[in-house]
Amino acid sequence: MAMAGRVRSMGPLIQKALSSFQRSDAHHSLLRPTLSNSELLRNYATASASKEQNVKVPLTMYGVSGNYSSALYLAAVKSNVLEKVESELYDFVEASKKSPTFSQFMKDLSVPKDARVKAVNEICAQAKFVDVTKNFLALLAENGRLRHIDSIAKRFKELTMAHKGEVKAIVTTVIPLPPEEEKELKATLSEMTGNGKMVTFEQKIDPSILGGLVLEFERKVFDMSIRTRARQMERFLREPLNF
Image (cartoon, rainbow, N blue to C red; front, top):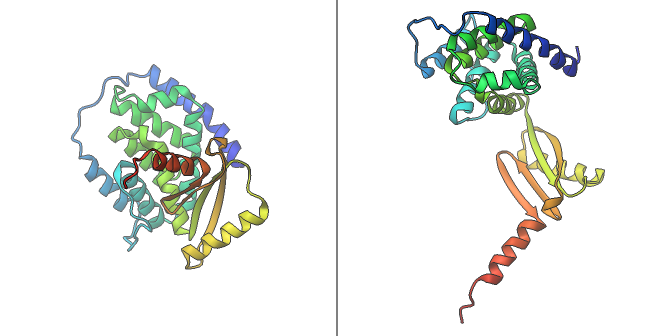
């Protein structure tokens, strides 16, 4: 099924799961021993594969989204389902964006933990997600981290691209780059990365930069826009002269 079709098909699943939650007695949480977030995350990263492998993340990630995306990457690689998990995570994020009710549900920490986990498990079961994806989303629900799913998915995408030897470059211009200039820029960036990495290109149009371009590449931003140059010149002209 095409990606757009898979995303559309998840809409009814989300609504069905939420309806089931609303009819149930889910507001009464069960009391049970719990582990800390860090312990749950370590357990998840190591428990998804039947046989331990020496797997390392290709990029160092930081913060909440970095920690969770790294744990998901390790589990997916060990279970040999990296592409499947990437696709399912994308579907889940895109479908949640199209459902304001579910989006609010994920952000609302007043919803009991058991209710969050139950709704996510139902969605994953009906969508036939693999165990790695299902367990990861349940872990987010358990830890109250579903509200970070968008940033986690973006960090996870960075890891999967690094795994494939791909590097993403985002170029912002006033008008689309001519094909010749785009080809030349790709070649330059490929030389900069080395090791035969493939550069994937994303163009954004933003008239407010006035001209030039802004390049986001390998977690760095190279601002060569006329807007930034004009601001720098303005600051220079405002500085007092020292004779």
